[in-house]
Image (tube, rainbow, N blue to C red; front, side, top):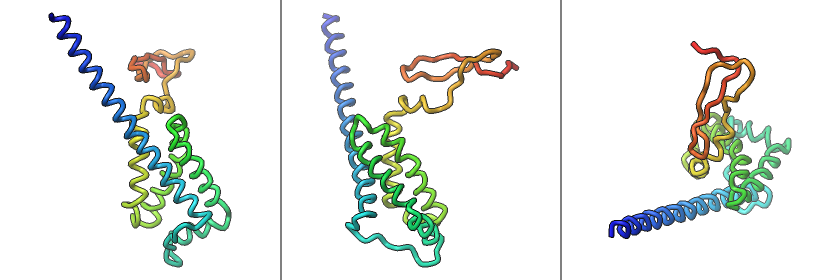
Length: 181
């Protein structure tokens, strides 16, 4: 009888876990499609002018910044990267590659709004894009942990260092050139 109760409890836990996993996968897909859609609409608008974007005031730092980027073709190049990255983010299988592509672009336009426009326009689309990206990065943090510097073993190392492996294993490595205290 106790075995049957434990089995039912295990099935309920597994069912709850599967429901949570499916829900998070659905939320992740919605966030990825929304982020990809935002990138593609804004980037394609640069080429096809679906809607009018407000121009910054003449002589302002924002106008001078865009005045340097647009005539040189640099802005068009960034918009092409936004289109490619937006498509990759919208597809679940290529989402991580897309996040790697659009990550520096997101940092750039957050810095543009913080430093160049002194915070004007930051609390609209730029903040939404940053939050969606951070959410997707958080969900895939174990995968992206390998991009962070790891301590590797090498000749002459004496001190051990630990870091978390994505499979929740603690891995000890040797730090080259560091001597114990």
